[in-house]
Length: 215
Image (cartoon, rainbow, N blue to C red; front, side, top):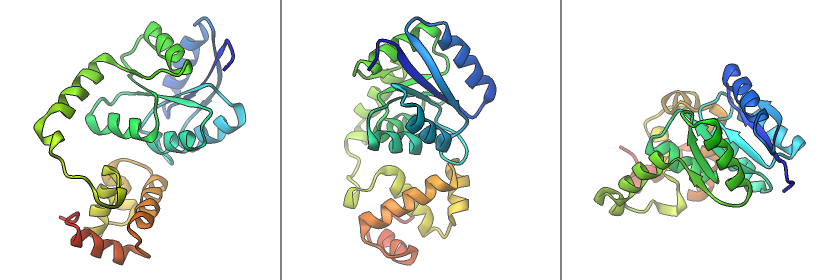
């Protein structure tokens, strides 16, 4: 990593992208190398521009921030900070499982973002204190401790997609239900089919009922 932290901003709202670019441009030791309007563009620009850190919104069209984070972290070399409006347990856990090294809400100020960029670029992990406190309380709850382990290495999101497949929903309908892109749903479907050894959706439905993952 260079002395200057090279940052790529990914957010589907133009005013947010431009506002962040102006804010970060005023921070010492930070250079905004590009902005992306969705996850697909973020992944492509990261490969082209080689930023040190990507500030990633989570809810975006075509490819959401969770899927984009997963793709970026699979190849390594770039660290991701989720910067989002959402602070619910699912969003936080999904982002961290995808490989994000930081999680901030859009209430964060310039100094907080600056500190998070320095820490994550330096190899540390950063979670908004309010989010971290809430997350610890959730994970410490008895229901969290006693939650059953999913079969065949399925993630909670993949299990959720599998349950919706069992309900007869198409990829388009699942994307609408989960508020993610259809490309993200297709990725989840491909991953879960491979994990459970199913050739098609019919076999996946049978597996869902056999393992109790269908409603």
